[in-house]
Structure formats: structure tokens, C-alpha cells
Amino acid sequence: MPEAILEALTELERADAEIGAALSDLEGLADELDAIRAKSVELQAFHARLPSERERLNAELERARAEALAATEALAEAERTARSAEPDRAREAELFLVRARDRLTVAERREAEAVSRREALESSVGEMTTAGRELHGRARRLAAELAGWSQVAGDAGKEPAAGLDGLQAWAEVARAGLFVARGQLASQREGIVRQANEIGAAALGEPLTSASAAIVTRRVRQTLR
Image (cartoon, rainbow, N blue to C red; front, side):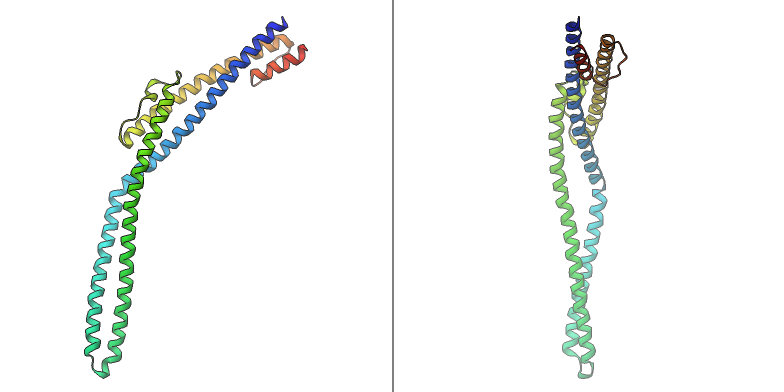
């Protein structure tokens, strides 16, 4: 009889460990899915604000260029005035020339900064496009992994459709599939642990509420020895 009890508990312990490992694996897949979903939301937000951001930066650059052009013309006028100024107006003309040069320096700096901001935005577009392709690659690999799990609904194992919308739609299906699969495995594990506690309680003559079959098996084995 003790051998039969230990054999039954050992089998339950093995099943408990297998389900625990499966749950851990599913947890890792869920974490990867959450990371994919978060990055997808980030990319969607970027592309949603891209048109208005482009418009804003283009308008800013246009204003900066107009200001630089006006400053260039003002400097040319100041230089002509300085060259032709009468002696009693030379000081005033020189100050006017200095201010014109300062104005052009400021305007050129603003134009350069506006160009830099627009170039940075376009560089970000390229980076986000690359990130989108990489994200689809991650999603396809995850879908292939999910396809190998019988507990996960079949649609979660299908490749996501093109575009961020397709990625988001697949992610929602995969998330639901993982939720159901984890719930099913957790229920199975609870049943195994409950069965182990019942066998252990019968063997020890006392109620047990252990959290795992391994704990029950260890207690019973120690007692029987």
C-alpha cells in the first residue's frame, strides 16, 4: 500500500511539474506578446501624428528660410549704407551693420535648427519603418511558437496580416488564446494538487492544503519512512 501511494503521488508530482513548466513557458510567450503589442501601439501613435508633425516642421522651416532671406537682404542694405554713409553718419551706419549681421547669424542658426529637426523626423520615419518590419518578424516567430501549443486557439498561430492594424488584430487574438490556455492549464494543475492533497491526507490521517504535489509527496515519503 505505501508503495502504491507513493507511486500515485510521484505520478501526480510529475504531472504537476510538467504543467508548471508549461505555464512558465506560456508566461514567457505572453511577455513577448505584451512587448510586441506595446511596440505596435508606439509605432501606430508615431504614424498617427506624423502628418501634422511634418506640416509643423515644414512651416517652421519655411518661416526660418524667409527670415534668413530677409536678414540677408537687410545685411546687404546695411553694407551699402555703411559704404556710402557721410562721416557724421558713419557711426550710426556701422551700428546698423552690426545689428544686421547679428540678425543674419540668428536667422541662419534658426534655419539650420529647423532643417535639423525636419531631417531628424525623416530619419525617425526610416527607423520606425525598420522597427515595423522587425516587429512583424517577431510576431511571425511568436505565431509559429503558438501554433505548436494545442491549448492555444488556432488563429493565434496564424501569421499576422500586413500593416500595424493587422499586427494589432493578430495580437488581440493571440492574447485571448494565451489567456484561455493559461486558465485551462492552471485549472488542471489545481485538480492535480487537490488530488495529491486528498491522497496525502488519506495516507497521513490529517487534512492537507499543500500548494504543490511535490510538497505532498515529500511529506508522505518522510512519514512512511
